[in-house]
Image 1: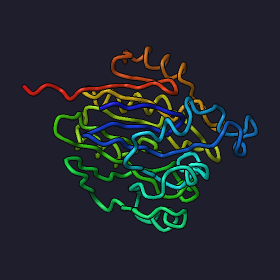
Image 2: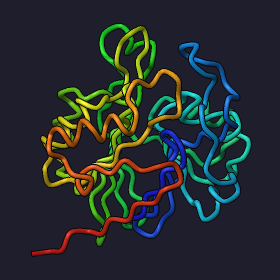
Image 3: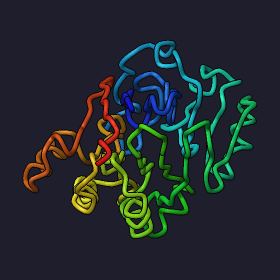
Image 4: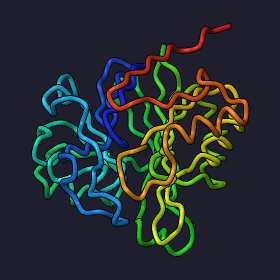
Length: 254
């Protein structure tokens, strides 16, 4: 697998012979409102032109409909005939944007040799969960590839921990900026990211969704510093820069 972080949660994943575009947010820097008064969003530009990002993409995944995961520019620029994978309940809104091939993941979806399974995710705790709305995580499995568990916009909570443990992934992708809404954590922060890494010592963790939105509370440097204090090495916890590609091979069979 090759995973490129574009910005925030937007990823380009080469896996099992397919190229996935995950949670496309193509808006220019400072094109959307601020959440906290600190800065308009997104706070940084995309690291490469949109046409380069779209090159080779054959499948799109939309985890939920927040603008930082599927914005108006992406709705305009992503080809409408590309297959879109989404959570149940979002297909009508995606169709209204003009997309013609939409598959909600009720339980799992098979794409050739690739199996995508939907997993629980919770965008916060308490009353804020209803405000944030439903989200999803996904796992990816294919012959000759590492098993990948993508947590999506979720805090660390028991159903997610149980799903990760049951999946026993080689790679875990977290959203780790510690964003807060109504003073409530709505995605993982440094402590939760490291708790998950420690609970899954066999897995490589890739922390994303960082330094792009003004309601984030954890920087890349803060996460790295916290990891060092807990003895989690850069080989176990990758914190990619925007535009960086990480390649991970399937573990050798014993």
